[in-house]
Length: 247
Length: 327
Image 1: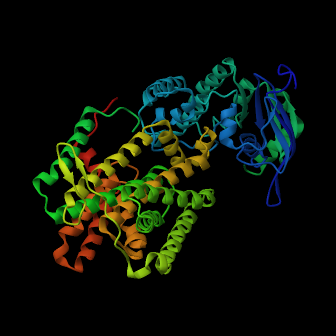
Image 2: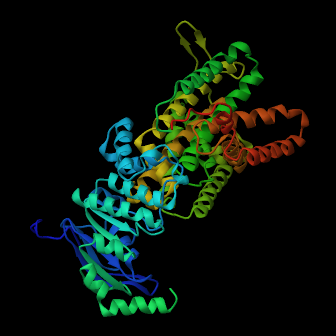
Image 3: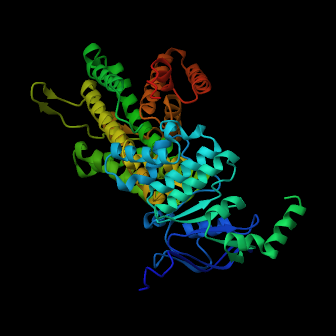
């Protein structure tokens, strides 16, 4: 048994994931330490979201293993991983459209409250926390992109995770909402949550992340502090190349 | 859906129940009673199908298999083993539930809903063909007759209660009791945490799974429960009419009218299937004088309702009695 103080919270060990001959993740390993915020960066198609799917259990890797809190969860289904303390948000938000904002959050918090009234009350507090306190009974269908991202966060938080995977939480969100989201993530971390982000916005990464991993073609290309990664010549060239291609 | 019932809703439900209880006192006409009994049987069937399709989001088109299995199962056990229908209707439900779990296990892993629809429809067709061809057991297309009726009993204060073709009132109350029971089960389920998880699964499987909902277990549970309820409806139908044919108990026409009832009443609502069953049965009975043209009128009415009230007749209530706004 590894010493929990020194062992990483999550260890991704040499995972490879292919889809019909296309290698989406190529022998990727990474450790997420307790309490840290790790950012996954990289161009489109680098395998960031696939990595999230493998960690969250949506895809089973062809090779390699996922160890969470010292326990091999490679064969566990997504709902089991949620109960084990691993939560995630989706890049393309998936609100339960016919449920209200509070009810959406209640789905995540089901195991922790015995009566519906208690459950509702606890979840109204989560909605408040992410700034949806004035939308409690509004159907999730009518929310804006930024509100949907916040709802995803609240829902994931309601499962009381120890590790949170956030897939482009600022994607499609208007610029003036971003500082609020950054503050929210900071609060989550100070509450003891460990976070892995997929993020394109360099400002968000440099403000939040302790460590960044730059992925390309399914593998780790560069890693270090956000500043080190951003100034790495290979990363600069890749992004400039993308820009020159008109992306 | 998950908030306590308002006073208005409680009064509405009590009013409807009272009206249903008093109806036989106003008219015990056997024809009216017969239509009402059939309405409630189909209302139960429609509610159970709505549970799977409207609440859990599984597009199944083969629930008439469970109706037929419950009907033939209960009838054959009662005939061949001499058991009381009071007991065999529950066995009919269990047979249907077992069949539901059996076919549910492979098909519910399919995420593509059109495939689920086709597979369930195919399963029901297999059941119908089996029932039609196992004539040694089911008498096939000739029809299974001589199905025992419920035994009578004596109620204190009311006196003897008998279940014969001449006395439809007792069947009416029995059907009403079953309907209320099924409705209570569905309301309790849908207002619970399990109901919440079920609606989440309907609106987004991946998201629900990421929030700890075990999709396979949830689908099997709701499929088994729904098949059980439909099986009991079928069994009651068998002992009420005393005669079954493959077309009447396992025909696809039956499934189509159930789907129409749910869509007309309101898919994904608790009262919609019952309202739809009532409205469509009433409609087709009211047009009896039109003879064959009534099917044309019936179809036209369904089209009109679906066009102008796409979420069903129950949305009329919202229109006339809007819920108090909370914000």
